[in-house]
Image (cartoon, rainbow over all chains, first blue to last red; front, side, top):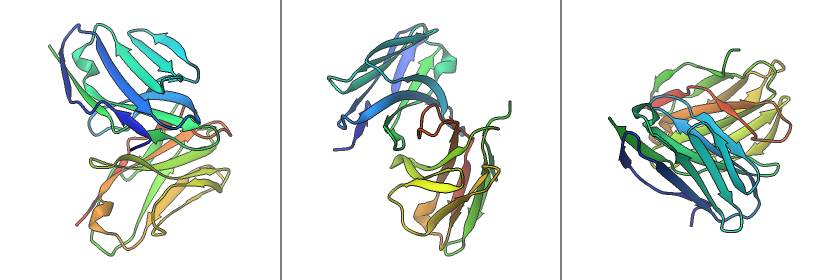
Length: 110
Length: 114
């Protein structure tokens, strides 16, 4: 079992839909949780960063962390074609380095 | 404020050759990490440098090495290239002594080994 599992996708939704992207993890030492967006032929771009259980909102994006269930989610409201990209969850145990999920490719259709 | 700069953007090398990739972090960032990204394995951690010292190393063979200079710029080297080394190599920089928090990635160097 991989340390971080992510819905494999690909995921296609119509413009304006609410998108839910999910990751589960097995290592209870993970302290920090991030979501990155990666467009084709680009490096990952940090979207959300959190270190506690609960919700964090930034514009159309909401990150949710449930440490008791070892589950994190990213919600995108009013999705746009420009949101079409691969979304990567990433986690860090204190003092160590990132462990990334395999990514979910999202297509938002006009 | 300039982002993380990686050079070159694209490289084609032959099996058995060696290659050096460069990463210039965001000004003021002292931590630089390197990752390999492939369709099959996703993003995998190679190593991380802070203030010219390697702090963490991933599970890659000794053919993969790196270093960091006093100005925080970093290089990674891959010797005796294999076909399986074809990948997008990404570096990320961050400010903190605590590894990994809010790291910012460069555009990557796409290495093709033929």
